[in-house]
Image 1 (cartoon, helix red, strand yellow):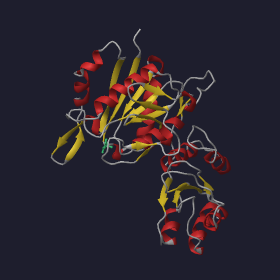
Image 2 (tube, rainbow, N blue to C red):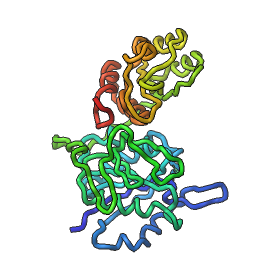
Image 3 (cartoon, protein in one colour):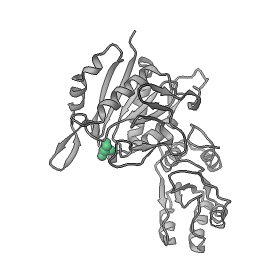
Image 4 (tube, rainbow, N blue to C red):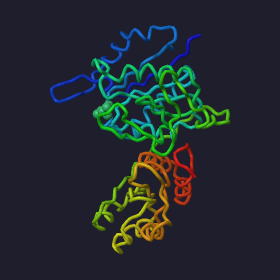
Length: 337
Ligand code: ASP
């Protein structure tokens, strides 16, 4: 029997048309073009269902409510399909791919997020190859993870970042090797893939209810007042994008702003601005000062993953100490301990 894949089409360049003001999604357009692709008629391809979202979005317009819509959609169709594809804009794809692993609890089937840099309707589009490849992977390989596929690489979703605004190799996973490399053969690196959850429980969706989290990127001379302002209630959590191994200014007003917030129960997680490597708060005086102010380490998590994890943890009404402890633990392969 042919395998079946479910395609959740959320929007993005892949199905866009050029309008007067620039590219925008066009309802019905992508499905028509996919139906006309001769490759999909081959016996080696799985059967597929496309669910076009309404409205189709440029992913720059997406919010955590859209992540939840995708997670619920997958859960609703979970039993009828072998694998799931999320067609998505590239701009915030890494955020969605980072959030879904936390939200889809007990996932045992592949969920692959992809899109393209050039619309499917255009001659030099990268969409055709991306779509065909993810259909084959989603149908043929029982990877129990949320992945992101782009530029011949299958990446762990919660390790992915967008690194190129206009190249075909638009995504990278700087702190974890690709889960698969796609050339003449589709090579899945099973040793890097998480084992499926061994509980017999059905897939469950963790709803996201909390949105009072944010990110702040340090820059030389950042005014302590700006930091104090962003940390005001109702903010509950902040991903602080610090320098190098997690360092920041030792200027007393800056440190005081952080400390006042952590003493009020705001969770501040230190992630590095560097693309690769890990936070190590004890290495420098400038990192130790942050730790003393109550800032915790995000280790080698991407900002996208740290932010998504905060949404997830704060949505569960956990005690602050538990949120802090789980932020520093590896839950879905997002962090190296
Ligand atoms: N602005 C588009 C989006 O994120 C870019 C893309 O899909 O490549 O929806």
